[in-house]
Length: 78
Image (cartoon, rainbow, N blue to C red):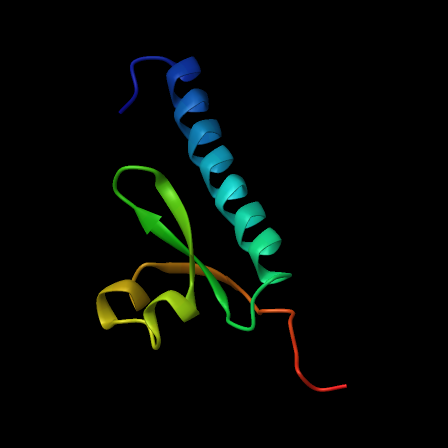
C-alpha cells in the first residue's frame, strides 16, 4: 500500500511511460525489419522492445514476458 496518493500516481505514470516508450521503439524498428517486434517486461527498465530476428524463435523465458507485438513492415513481395 502506498503512503500517499501522489506516490501511487507517480509509480503508475512512470510504468505507463516506460511501456509507451518501448511500444514506440517497437513501432519505429518495425519499419526497418522483416521480423516481429516484441514489447517485454523487464526487471530493470520496466519494458523493453526486442526484434525476433535477434533471437530467432523467442525462447520460452522471453515468450512468457511478451506484453505486445508489432509486425515487421518490410516485405520482399511486390
